[in-house]
Amino acid sequence: MKNLLVLLSVFWVSALSGYAYNYKLPVTNEVKDTQSVYYNMETKEWSRSQLNQEDLLFTKYMTKGSGGYSEYDTAQKQYDMGAGSTYEFLDGTSLIGYNAHTLKFYKFTFNGEKFEAQELTPTEVQSYFPDVVIVKISSFKNNKITVRKPWFKPASFMLLNDTNTDFYKYQFENQQQYQLIKGVFEMPKNMFLPKTLIYSHFASKDPMFPKFEITVKNGR
Image (cartoon, rainbow, N blue to C red; front, side, top):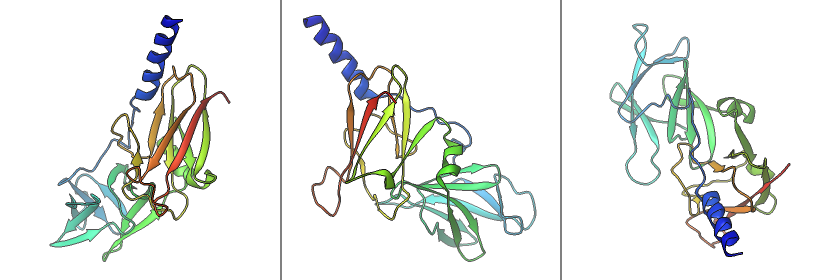
């Protein structure tokens, strides 16, 4: 009996630790702080190098302090991303951004005066993460939801916001690992008992910042 309890404890600790999600291209083709990219207003295409004389040169900078938003500078001017973005990557000639505070993805273009953001649909987001189960915020009932993973197989999930709810400074309580995309969470194959994750504003009990509960169970 004692050995069984020890074995179950090991499995439970393993289940809490999770595993690292394997991000793939083009998501890992990040535009990093102080890196430069080019934009052609006629074709609306982005590139790492200048392809035409009229291409605009942008240099990315992360804002200091709270939020960590991206800004793109060109010709002595600073431009924010409009809808906001905390992480960007190049998908061919498209600039895709992720806002960790809204849990939304955007495709960005520039009209000569400001950045324009087109929110990606869940289907478009899924194309970048084909092996992830998308969990829409609109699917929560009373801020709670139950999702399932296959027995004896790892599973990756992503919170995707399709509402007007704001998640500024929210995070998973007792987060196991840093995630490139904040809404991603993983469950290992040796998870035998249901597990509930809490996504909250610093574990606040303030009704202005309601917590969200995600219970993961085995089975279909």
